[in-house]
Image (tube, rainbow, N blue to C red):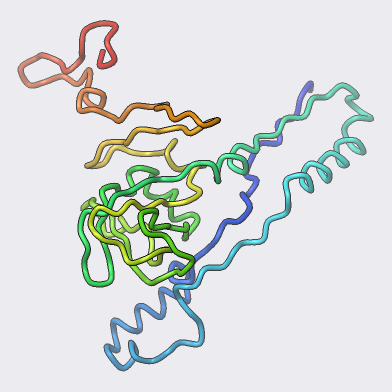
Length: 237
C-alpha cells in the first residue's frame, strides 16, 4: 500500500437550508392547502421562508485531525505512504454564480430564462437554499418572491426569496455560490446548457461556449440514414 486517498465530501462553508424545503415547511404548506384561508391567515411559530446557515468546521481542522491519525496509525507501519484529499467541493462552491434574466413577472413571482437543467435537478435540492440577488436593483432587504424556471417541470423553482427590489422584466438575477455539483452536472432537458464565463484578474473570457443544436445531436442517425455530425475536425464533428 503506497497511498491512501481519503476522497472528498468536505461540506462548504456558508451553506444554508430553507425551512420551507424541510419537513416543517412542507407540513405547514400542506395544512394551508387543506384548511384554506383559516390556516393561511394563522401565523406559525416559525418563519418557513427563513434560512439557517449550516455550521461547518474549517478545512484545516479536518487536515489536522486526519493528519494526526495518519502519523499515529499508518506512518509507523508504512513510513513513506502518500495521503491524498479531494476538497474540490469545498473550494469550488463559492466562486461560481448563475446569471439569469427575468422573462415575465407574475403576482408574487417571476419566470426567468434559465431552468434547473443548468445544474442538475437533484443537485440543487441537496442544498435547499441559495442566495438570489437582483443585480439590476440590489438592496440588503430580503423579500418573499418565488422564482420559477421556464421548464415544464413542477420542481423548476430557483427559490422563494431574493435580495433586492421586486424584479421587473429584463432584470438580471444572480444565484450565488453554485460552483460545486451544479454546472458540471447540468443535464439536457428542453433548454440548452448555457456558456460558462470566467472573470479572472480583470479579464473576462468564455471558458465554454453555449450548447448548440448540433452539439447536442451530432452523430444521431436520422430516419433518412444521414447524420447531424459536422465535417471532420469541426466543433460539431
